[in-house]
Length: 194
Ligand code: 2AM
Image 1: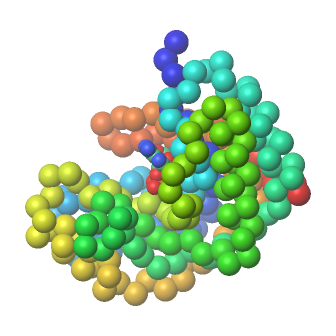
Image 2 (image 1 turned 90 degrees about the vertical axis):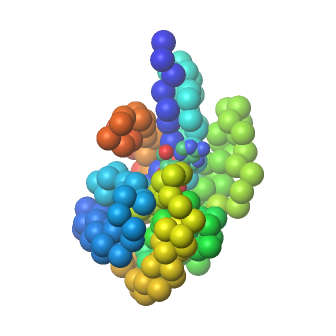
């Protein structure tokens, strides 16, 4: 049987997704044509853990482990705003909107999800958790002059705060890669009950 490509993420409210679509359109106008693959705004989410290819038989254990995390984790509120690029503005690969949550509950939730998945055999993420909402990915074929322009536009755009999100659940999501972009299907949602 085909493995399932899975990840764990916090879904975002519709009005914020519409704002993100506006930001994408505003950026696209200023960037070299076709230089960025913009993600479908309806699917924008805050990723907590990417699991990747997973045998279907493992899904019940993942669900049980995530349900246990959700029973203990508290809801949190985070702010969405400001723009940036990974790895940096000089070598942009991913264009994102930032997520700020000084209270530390989002970080605690991500760590709890990470540990639960490490216990199930997934590798621990080597990088520090940098919560973000991906808007688009710079195409591999983009000449360095165009990449520089993308970084300049992102650096020069003062987005400010788009809004606050009350996160009271997270989801296990299946991703199917299509030529038109990734299609996401939530397999299970977990309410934060702590
Ligand atoms: P992102 O949050 O930076 O966009 C589904 O692909 C989600 O898992 C995306 O949101 C993506 O990153 C995240 N992700 C993390 N590591 C990944 C990887 N190695 N391959 C694909 N997606 C990954």
